[in-house]
Image: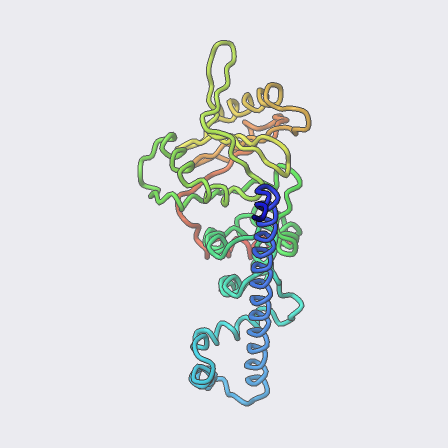
Length: 336
């Protein structure tokens, strides 16, 4: 009779082998994807070079793709429709240097990114996909919400060029802030009458998408966070902790226009958290008052001389107007 295998050590062995197999499959998948992306780049290069050598007149460009689609599909099967070949051609035109391709992005990522014709925007989304490991679904959402444009319009010309080259870098409280925030994923119409509590509930129910909109580093702590001062109870709508900046982030939601007393209340919350909730190693908390409307002049006067990290932003329940944001960005970049 043979001795039984030690249960604990065998379990460890099985777990180690399982981890190696999962890692191997992931690495194999990335390797296959990298080869596919590079193959499509070379196909695109050949198509463009064939056209540029004068082998195809401009009016026959469409016919070239049609013929290639028929012949390649007959020999190699699916994957070479006319629309796919057009995307492959565009891919090369958007990324003419193979060294600029990222081994972390799948072909599906690139298909979404090359829908843009703005080099700065393209560079930004490549960097953000690398930094935050976005899925294709997450990338689509961020592009639809015009994340690059919204971030860029809060910066000067130098700042725009920097985020295009490096992506977002969170080094200070200001780097967290967007204006506006976009909550189109709630499925609410701007005409609907929604109470602040309902808006908060919807955000919690869609926490994954809400965290995606907030950005990297946010960890949810709680909602309606209770503060007691002089036998009076106050409630912060949403509390997060930011892992990178090592601080609490407090969010107060206002369904209508932000008033000066909303800003004063958030300032009180920040003072409380700094003294009562922070522990050793925590940095000063950040407060964000989010409302459907804000008056810039009122906000300027209400936040004057406040030393806390307090920010006032708008939110909207619909996707931004791409043409409008594009025009504003072009105007910003053209200013000397």
